[in-house]
Length: 141
Image 1 (cartoon, rainbow, N blue to C red):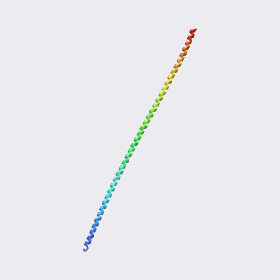
Image 2: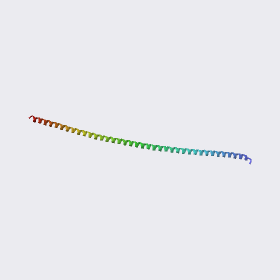
Image 3: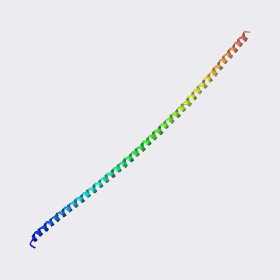
Image 4: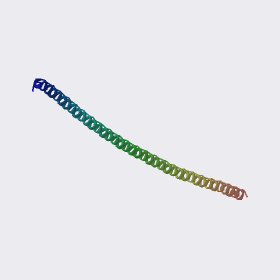
């Protein structure tokens, strides 16, 4: 074969070309693999971020719920305290009213007694004067 060297040369170029193609293919495969790895990493990161966000949201929700519960309890406690205060005030008012009534009644009773005593005293003085006059008139006769 007179053109064997040319054939070999072409084969050599073909081998180089195949090797270059193989290298390019390997590079592309490695690049694709790296890209897939990066994509997976990004996906995992996004998933973790979403999970953290959900956890934070749940925590905030729980905190808000606890706050609302505490607020409601405080409100109920304040209401109960106010009711107790109002009840005590009403009781004290009623007690004071009863006391005032009793005081007025007692004063009226004392006044009535004094009036009766005064009337009796006037009667006694009148009787004494009448008796004295009768005695004096009797003695003068």
